[in-house]
Image 1 (cartoon, rainbow, N blue to C red):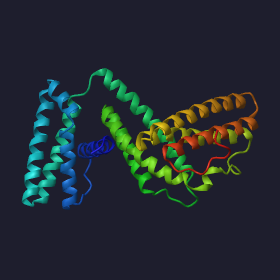
Image 2 (image 1 turned 60 degrees about the vertical axis):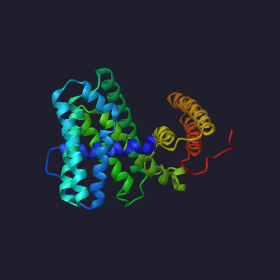
Image 3 (image 1 turned 180 degrees about the vertical axis):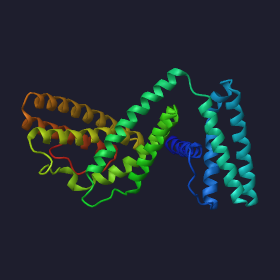
Image 4 (image 1 turned 45 degrees about the horizontal axis):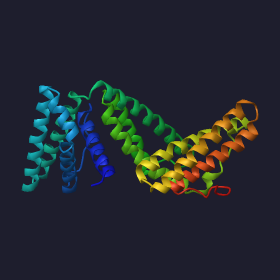
Length: 300
């Protein structure tokens, strides 16, 4: 299993553990064999997370160590019940294992410096995702309820990450936000394939050139947030990565110049320059493997 798949599996396990710990009645879940096997696999993945297990053992927190032992015990019980064909017992034991492992992680947090870094990373990822989800929402056609599966999943994961952060579990929330990023990338990739996205209709919303500039800047920043997601998820070849860096630097330079022009009162030329900056972002996304409408102009 590669690192990305392993990270998604851990994120799924953390989400499951969060749901089990969260207050309120649990939603009814199907108990089919495939579902039970997935829960057991998620538990096994958490137990194989050597860094977290070592942190719990080394913490000296007896309660955390006890929850870790309970997690291992219930995991073994779930495997035994599954082998006997008792799906209900297997599901119950797997859920208990996830709950105990989640509690063990919470009782043995990382060192303060690592917690601070995780909190900062959470805040950054959350802000980027909120911008992307808002950009996605504004591009929905009239009458579209926004029930795209990836969008719904991303919104749900963002909510779970916020809850985890509120509980002080920023390292876990980062894993969950990474899973949300995967859904956003998949959905935005489909969205960007729509030719209509190239031209933004400002007839009703932009009353002045300055308004038009601000709307284009919002779209530009959403695309800029999408570039690192594409690089992280799609892992482009070194030559493509070099192109992405080159296009990104050019785009940032053009955007800074455009902002300066707009602040100087030349909104019309600023908008033209900002659209050139957006064109370079499209090229960066294309180099990363995200399908976008063909950029305007010649390739430098």
